[in-house]
Image 1 (cartoon, rainbow, N blue to C red):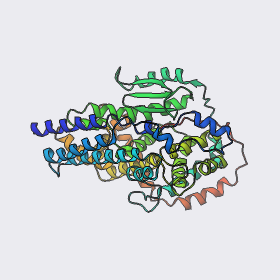
Image 2: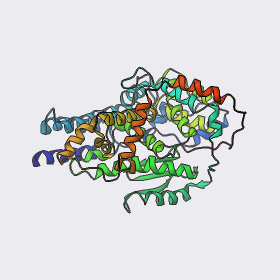
Image 3: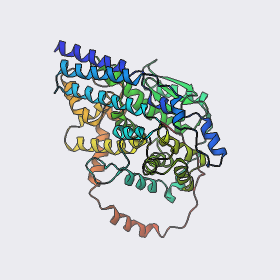
Image 4: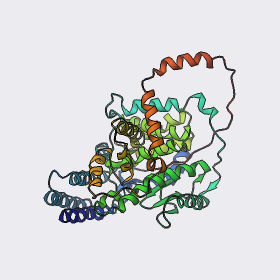
Length: 443
């Protein structure tokens, strides 16, 4: 066993080192001036994100050298751990993902980019695991739910009046109650497209952004508890050190888990949830050939502000072609991952193995990795997660919540709604209680 563990650590450390220069979002980001120019043109002039633009943005690594190193590592994993070793197979799966990432980034601004993005993150036409519905169908359904007239009665007066500099201090104070001192940093950034993003043990806030108290609550659980928490838990692993870094195969689980934590802590709100579902529709429109301006107009005409319409559109077109077809499909991960995490938790409870659920936070993992990781945890190879949200540390409430949820799935909601609609139709018409407020764009 000691020889196996030493091999596992050496191979894991090599993967961590090889992937370190890869910064996918940095490689495809657009400057903020693109938005200013596009909106100043009335939404009629395409951003200057063409092939020449990407060719002028040098990658932070040599794709050929990266692929050579990864191929050598893949051979060594098989040779030193064995072709059928469970942890070795997870290592190989991550290596395969990074090989595709290199091809995707080499193809920025071309049709090749979109092909490799679909291989990594999927397509809006993919069907949900174990179901017939496509991601686009689910996204449209959620958009309708979060756009109903009832939403106007739920909007609260959370003013976006907290500057990024002040938000840094407030968010750092919140995270200081969850993490050990010095484990997490919150800082200002002028190099991110979204309003907030996490990388490693750092949460970055866009210096141009303004936040509300509710936004900070979302950032605490989404970026802090999930993205940073799983990174730190992975870094604390004594042998499987690759669990501290994430290839695209873990994106759906990470983003879905983050959205789920927003829900379980009652941090989210309808406008935030609609933004997540809008991203699925945006991906599908662009995949089907709509160009940048057409997608932008779709969301503007559906009631989003010009700023929000631009943001959801540029997220999809960054790295691809502005004419559509070849786009960045990562934004499918939020809805896809949310549904898959919920189904995983329900299945673990109904199968009698709720104790496996904390392994969702052991590091950067996919749902398929968790049974193997749990087995190795019982053998002493994988350490339990250090940072764990309270509802996953004491599973009683989570068990009851999802147990009731599973039971209620037997109820015919269309008949129930028909019954109660007869009562609701007798209510007098009421006006919305609050005015609309914006929300933060989290990558």
